[in-house]
Length: 160
Image (cartoon, rainbow, N blue to C red):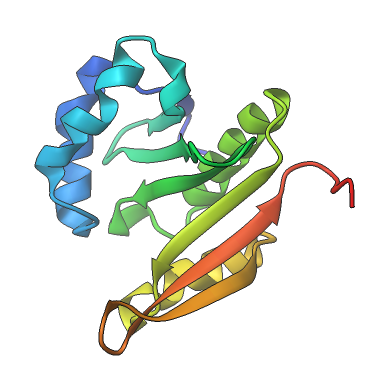
């Protein structure tokens, strides 16, 4: 991250570049992004934490959405770093910023869910290297032969 860039909250001006990043990575249909960001851009922060990294070159982005059914629990989806910048520390920097923001708000758990297909091997390794543990595996969740893997990381010491 020696490029002189900065991490900041996502703004409306970032949407076009972030849609391009999402499309490039094939994370989900990029046209969904505007709807996902609508509440946040309207300053309704109950929709989570949306951050982006800005410097010369492609952007990077991280989002943490709340789990409406559990107190102080949510999941980052996605942490998106352009292939040309993967391995540069941007994903780690964005995850650290998300974790700090959530911890400051008193949140306690961070969950990450993803497919167990080989295309996500690097993403699963990223989670494990950053202190997440595999908490659950739901066989055949997405389709026959495609499991869902759930990773968990405590943001604050457990009270148990």
